[in-house]
Amino acid sequence: MDLAFLNPLYEHPGPWASVYVDLSQRAEDMHHQRHLTAAAMARELAGQGADEATCDAVRNAIEELRHSSEPHGRALFARAGDIVLDPSLTRPPQGGSWAEWAPLPRTAPLLDLEGEDTLCVVAYIDRKGADFELRSAVVREDAGSVAGRQWPVHRTSSVDWSERHFQLRVENTWEHNAAEIADALAVCQEETRADLLILVGEDRERHAVRDRMPQRLRDRVVEAPHGAGSRLLDADVERARAEHERARADAELERFLAGRAPDADGRVVAAEGVPALVEAAREHRIDELLVRPDGPDNHREVWIGEDPDQLAVRRTDLKILGEQHSWPARADDALIRSAVTTAAPAISVAPAAGAHREDVPVGGLGALLRWS
Image (cartoon, rainbow, N blue to C red; front, side):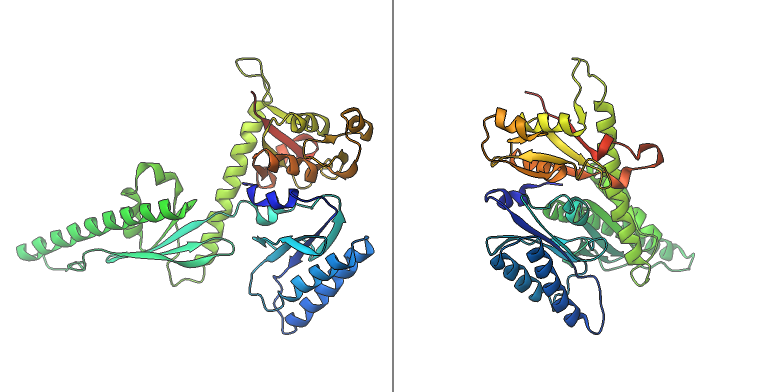
């Protein structure tokens, strides 16, 4: 997950209100329930010591979501009476809406709730062309279309020589249209930067288009088993998106496991455990942060200063480094702050956590390291 969008959160000092609002519930009294949520979140923040202006800003922001059609939810990050950032979520927050007042914004949950939102182009293919639709967890919009040759496109059952000649022309039309669709789909992928290309249509049509896709895109192509009119198609698309996200997390975890062993130059390029990660963060050597959401070290207390590289396991360590002001913070949020300011991505490895990997990385926090 590219964390650059979080930069505004680290341009201002804390403390911060972090609120995760569940918008997934649909009921007759939905508007009233969201009104109650707005009041409850403001009350929760006030109880934790938040200032009145920030509580009011959060309440008003949630009130404005009363009529929202967003399918999952919204995160709100506020300080000094202002909502600084309010990203949409790709999954509803587990357990419903919640709020926290802390020295740092609670950004770690975003790795699962807003993180690897796989973008895909769904291509609805027939013998005459295709319509393209752009989809993510929160986006569903038209992405263009392509029309091939319109005649002839249907076979006949005759064995007459002239009819066989006609059928050959049909075959040529199909081949031509499949190539046109593949070319247009490749252009659409380049323009949208889609992670997946999902083909919907009859078996022969899907296969013909897939066979003509550029080699560089072949591993991004998935064929949906159900057609455009099936109520199961949405499940096919979501399954393909989830499998893509799991595969990417699994690949990063494999890189991390390989990085535990020294390379040809004797360097170990993977680190885990809070002390090692804090040291790497201070030295700006985190290349990618890995977070296992259920890890016990995630909420371990570390100490932070005003700058992102002012980070220590013990408060006295910050004083030794010359920092006069310090605050306790969660390890995961402190490490994400460091990753953001050094342009390092982060990923949740929850999708890759199998029975034999449930403790990787150790404590729930790890990193691939960069070397100067």
